[in-house]
Length: 309
Image (tube, rainbow, N blue to C red):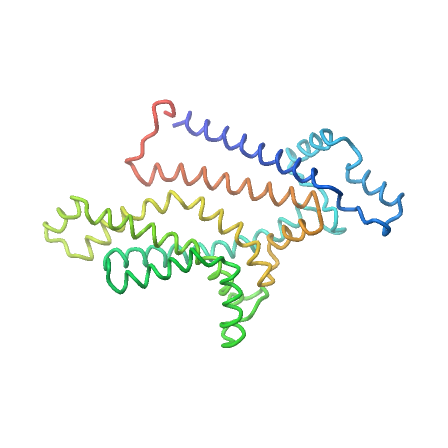
């Protein structure tokens, strides 16, 4: 167990280093820089800005300096904001993005398994067709399209909820629902196939033969085992929610970390691009590692290989 955890930890560190390195050199390979505005900036001012942010040094030296600061937890100063560092922006924006993502995940984890189980229990009947139509729509329609549709019909025409903004719970409902539809649909389809497989197992027929009620068999035996595959994909689903929130935050005017990420790309803010990318990479790598480890404890049938013991 210890060897397995150590191996996964080392692989996670290597993965993070590769992401940092690739992002750094790809970003600097794009022609120009954040301060290049022909005819709008005196040469002396331009040279001072390059020196201030270390852009006048050779690229390998810039890379080593960045890694050194990164080991101290310093993402650097934003090249566009004059009042906040990248660390400050992350501290201000991430709690909002995390709240929205967790709300969307909660919606997906409540309604996704319910729709999938319902579809399996009523296979090839109306509830099954309705559930799968919802799943197909959720997978096929991108979250930003769904967000636009919700704004048009729910916020504008019916005026049930605000179009955008942040501050009250009602501001979160439309963006959270738009963000949750894809993982909800994926979970519903996965739950349906898993539930159908479990319902055909011998231990389900044995439980029924003992006189246990139908719903007790379904809830205590079928659902409990059918939901295990969902746990194994939680890391990927959460990562999709985090990345998908970038566009949703922009559409609904939410001041989360996604807003800073989009702005950093538009402004060619190197340090902010690196900071947000690395921050999200750390979170996603940790989540995938946590889900893998948690799955071994949730399902006792999962065994580590001899090499990983």
